Length: 133
Image (cartoon, rainbow, N blue to C red):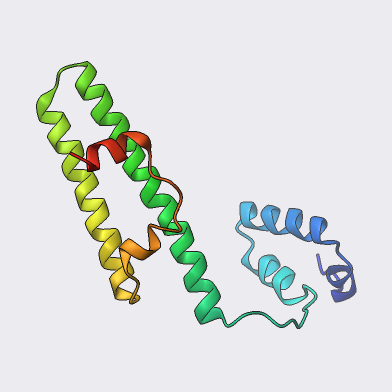
């Protein structure tokens, strides 16, 4: 069935989103491309993508790092409760590896990890306690 461009161009954002998902489900690449090509375009001024995308990447990655570390902290707490000393050292090593990798990423951007920690989300209290020992 041939659909006129004017129909595609008149779709609301919600209708276009639903049609796009349906085209993906049907694996209809022609329909998908038509939906993309006929989507209204806007011109806007944005911050330099090299800056804004990097900042967004670092913010997202810092959240992922914190989640990974918190997961290993939970593992340590469970290992302490179940008296699995070998697991404790494994989780602690994971945390150390995550922190080292994060520091390397920051260093690759010329960012001092000690400086960024001053503006990052607060560390989990258990992590702070572990770090002081």
